[in-house]
Amino acid sequence: MSSSFMQLRHLRYFTGIVDAGSFCQAAATIHVAQPALSQQMAALEAELGVALLHRSVRGIRPTREGKVFYREATSILQQVDQLRSIIRSKAGEPEGVVRLGMSSALAASFARLLMEASRTVLPKVRLHLVAGDSLQMKPLIVSRALDICAVLEDEPTSGVTRQSLFQQRLHLVRPPDTGEAARAISVEELAELPLVLPTRPSTIRDVLDRTFEAAGVMPNCIAEVDTFASALSLVRAGLANAILPKGEIPDIPGDEDLRPLAIDPPVHMTACLISSGDLGPAAEAVSALLVAQVRKVLQTRPLAGRELMTTP
Image (tube, rainbow, N blue to C red; front, top):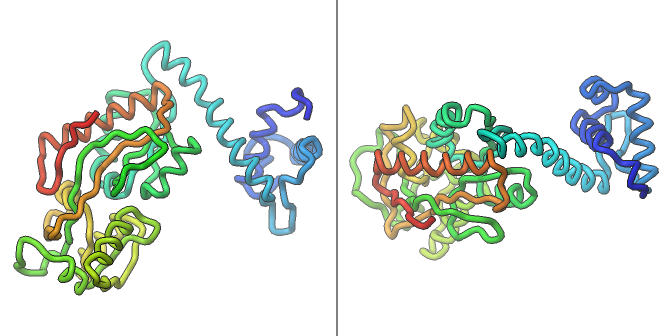
C-alpha cells in the first residue's frame, strides 16, 4: 500500500462511520458531504484490498477486518489527540484527558474525592471515568483504551505495572433491621443466607466461588448484579445480603445503617493501581493524586477491615 494514501482523516472518517452506524449520520457529525465520505471509504477499502464495512438497509457495521481496523485506528487517534497535551504538559502544568478505570466498589468511595481534588490541583486535566471489574479493566489497560485503573484483586495482575494501595477484608453486609448477631459468620452459615452476588466475570465472585467450593457448600444466590450500588440497593430493600469490601460501606452517605459482619476465616482483596507503565504527564499526575487521596482517607478515617499497604 502506498505510504502517501492513508492519512489521519481516513481513520477519523472510518471510526466516525462505525460509531454513527450510517454514512448519513457520520457525514453530519464530521461535516463531510456524504458522497465524498462514501468515495473516501471505497478508496480506502480498495487500497487495503479488503471490505471494511458491511452495508445494508439496516445501516453500516464493520466486517471482521473492519473491527480490527477500527480498534487500531481508535488507538492511533487517541495517541495523536494526546500528543498536543503531552507537549504542553512537558512545558507547564499537566493537561489533557486521562482515561481512568475504577472498580465500582472503589469508585463509590473515592471517585468523588478524586474529582474534587483534580479540579483544584489539576485544573487543565479532564477525567474520563469508567467503572468495572479488574477482569474487564486489564484488557483495556493492555490495549491502552484506559490509562490507569484502580481495582480490587485477589491475585496480582500480570503484564501490567502494579502498585498496591491497601488490603480490604470482605464482609457480609446485612439489611438494617436484621437484629443483633455475632461478630463473625462462618462460610457454612453464609451459604445458607439469601445472597446477591457479583455477576461473572468478577474478581470478587471468583474468590467467593473458590471460598465456597473449599468449604464444600453451595451459596444461596437469589440474584446477581454488575455493580456495587445495585448490590447495596437490594440490601437496603431487605431482599438479600451482600458480600462486599466492608471498609467502603461507612464512606457512602445513606449506607451508615447497613450491618457488616466479618467472615471467618477472613477473605481479603487488595486494592491496586494498574497501568501499562508508559504514562503521559497528565496520567502520571492523576495517578499520584489518586494514591495521595486514598492514603489521606485511610490515614484520617481508619476503618476496620482495611490495612494500608506500604509497598511503593
